[in-house]
Image 1 (cartoon, rainbow, N blue to C red):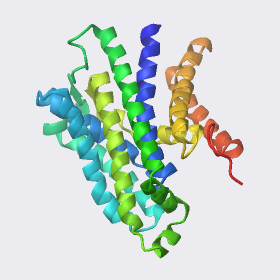
Image 2: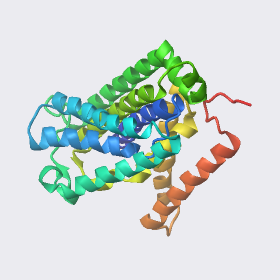
Image 3: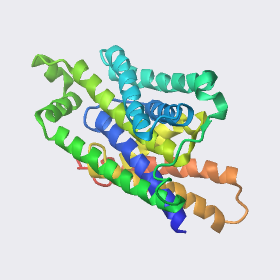
Length: 295
């Protein structure tokens, strides 16, 4: 039971990182990113290639897993952010599918649909498997706290007030002589770097990566966590991620309680429960659990 709860906690902390990055892009800057899982996949695969296939140390994999998504976010921002926000949503969605197709087709680097196995578990050489997971959870907590601290410092700075002005009234910002496209590109890159960090942790925890782990529904789940917790609220991102995992894992427990329900049927019901929860939040609590209600 302790191992199961620890696994849920580690997965939830990975989703906390993802939700924080998406919240920085959309909650504070108003950037609609429907391809967030693509940056998550880039971080995971970059780390897996560096550590499992090249034999490089873990810190190198983490560094490359953060830098690669950030660098690839730059051209997307330069092209799409000069257009309307809905174009960014379309471009990022297409980008995530391109990333997945490249992962499948470039077998000499990614091993195609079979994925990359043998990603070393962090701290495995220091202690046993259980102790390694505990140490990983502690490091993940520290990483989440560091990202929250960084984002809080940014949001409270003049730069943070500027990006929130982009979200609230970009036309007024243009009238003041500012260039929103440049700042939005920077925000997109930072959010992508956070997703890459989450992907690096995920690869080291699971031990292997495959294209099936990075499907569009992951982006939908991160959006769901952000909406449930509260858009534009740092604490909301943390609460929303854990609430999402509670809903997902609660449906697994329900299958053991309710007889005669197959795993396929429960998987479909799980999606239905998440969709219903999203509708109810938008209808009755659009600001999320910790959001500020606006008239």
